[in-house]
Image (cartoon, rainbow, N blue to C red; front, side, top):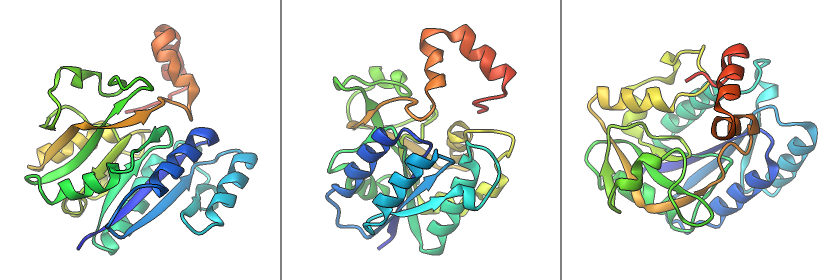
Amino acid sequence: MLQLHIITPVKDSINTTIQTIDSVLQSEMTVELNYTVYNDFSNEENTAELEKIAGDGHIQLVNLKDLTSHPSPNYLLVLQMAQKNALSEGAHLLIIESDVVVNRNTVQTLFDLSSMLHKPALIAAVTTDDYGSINFPYLFAMKFEKGVVNTRKRLSFCCTLITNDFLKSFSFTQLNPEKSWYDVFISHKATELGFNNYLITHLPVLHQPHSSRPWKLLKYVNPLKYYWLKAIKKRDKI
């Protein structure tokens, strides 16, 4: 049976990160897994808190400052390291970001679907707010029926399983190092290579958007300032 590697990239936002980690550790699973938290230059206080959590032995912590001087975000490095580790153990890769809280059945359900669906590359849980309504980045899915949706729209990495077959088919070393985020490109690359992407609309997870990068919330309250900062400071390159 394939193993499962779970990763959570972290940039501060320690309160939501603790919620994420706790929810993953409380998951009901039969699959063997490896859970790694990648600390992407959090401040000293939050790094110390993550090291304390890792000291319990339930997660592995990688402090990226020990590996690179490249400023955050370091999603490219995280993806490349995670792909290499998953391939070395024949595992699927599940990304659960630090502003997401999963339910007890989320991880096992995504893993089970990986062997039930036709040629899957990405399998994502739909995101919702505190009230259970679908929220960013899956607002387009509000019109979908509940179930398993084969979609050509981009999937986010909020809570997404990347199958081992797809990991073997496309090396993340080919990703553009000038970009910051890669969910859009990888979603399209998967369909280009003949795989299918699935959004599971009856499997909600709580999403608290941009908790680790609050400046991105400007997109909703002051979009002109958001896009000005994005252009001037060359942030958020997709």
